[in-house]
Image (tube, rainbow, N blue to C red; front, side, top):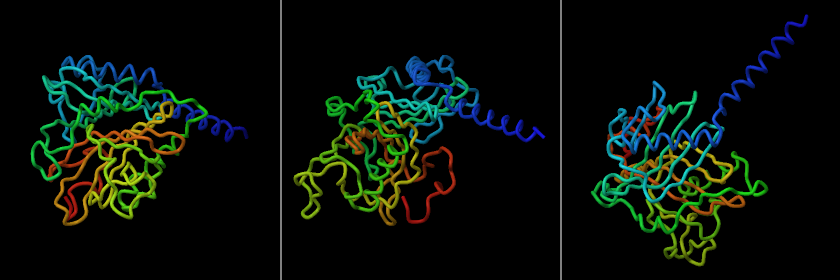
Length: 310
């Protein structure tokens, strides 16, 4: 007669074990793995990175073999280094710069840790010489000097001022909804909230007549221009750092039909204060037409592109 109760207890224990396993790498553990991985990349030694046997890495959505790509080209971490940690998802994020010889590139990196090994790494890399939205070389937004002066926050927010992770994600989603709806009133942002693309400021310019929503006639993160975006697709909230109230999310701007601009594949780092967005820092590139983006699951519906889309 007691057998159902025994099975129920065993099932409950299994659920607890699964939940614990999903969070078996705490903040210190994630930072240690991230730093070890970054050090291995900079020293060109994949064998020292603690990689899982099925490790997979992409750079701007292109799968890179161990020892190639960043493993060869990165010569050190750059002057800007920010780390964000999410033990719930077992993922760590790096936003800042890396040295590639004499060149300093803006990067965002997602690292996944499982079974005490690094199982995945996803890189967003931007260089000053990269193609712009029309494909013309050297036309991507890029301003490392401004980025150095407007660094993303690295902080510990008092517990009483923190929002739960679900709320952080929901507030960030209002930003994307504002873009696709062409309506800044949807965005939950502080007046004057800033946004930088590879360090280049995309705010504080004169607002078009009749469009001011409370920032003294200047644009802010709530009032971006019309990007010609049909949808902000493949949103991946890969780090929700509750301690620092920071969200790292990757996504893609899929353009309106007949819009010739390239797709924009990016990571954006959001800092939130008291329920609203304070600032946004993006690392991104414009994807060539034939490139499968993001080249991570789920793949369905992402590639090939529908007719009429770029």
